[in-house]
Image (cartoon, rainbow, N blue to C red; front, side, top):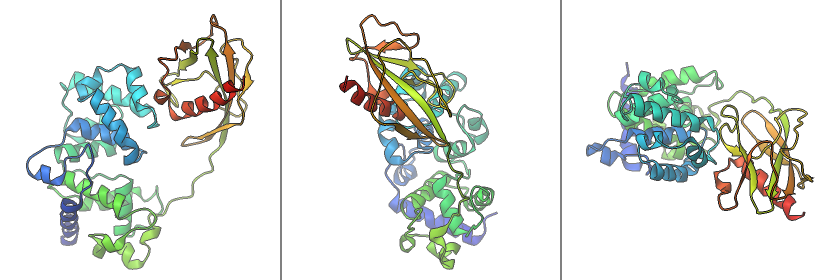
Length: 355
């Protein structure tokens, strides 16, 4: 049960949110919400999935394009997978896009296009974990669920001066956050906590003077707000190596292939190449005079650094590759490629221009 101070923290934060809420394309603001407008669960879910491991600035454009192409869950459920994967390009973590489509199809097929309202039912859908389920339930349906993203995690760690390092401290932080979650206006409260962490209780230089709940903050009182939450030392990322082949046909068509549905960049278009490991080898996709583009391409994934050699070749009109397909120049869209493959294309153009 919430005590009086915890209730006062919630009320103070909601008053601040009513005056300072961020305007976001997927959000129903506190004024509209008070007037009776409910958030669209589809837009809440889509934004929450997009925002995982990504910033609001990076998501805004993708969200606008997605909702223009597929304005509701039924439209997304009917979309071809290749189109959804291409629209996702640039957001990373491409398994999210596959799960996004699988989830839309489940909601359209099993729930008549209406998202379930409970965390339990939401969390049973593809790609919806405990955090996303709680966020959709709270924001879209005002369920009194505890929503803890990275911003909320930081606010709560400071508010209660949680000094155990992450990730070990997560359980305590969630327990403290649950004590603060109100029974009423849970969706607005969750978004208020997110906004506070994003705009005031920031990672390196928290603006405690502007914080509406600074008077309750134990870390501020102890002079350690800027140092929390502590994080366990990260392990050094290993290096992996690979080869990418870029072939351009006489008519300008480029050889691309769709990657396997599972694994990194699964289901995305990319250039033929090797596995990524310590000593990669891979036969070229077709016989040609292959030349190495200048320099080594480096790209960092969550768990490793990738070093790629980019080999390029100009091939005749009748070239017959063992894998992949030649894409005519009019149909080639670099923006639909994942970031790594766009980097390969930029490096390949240097090599091709020197042939």
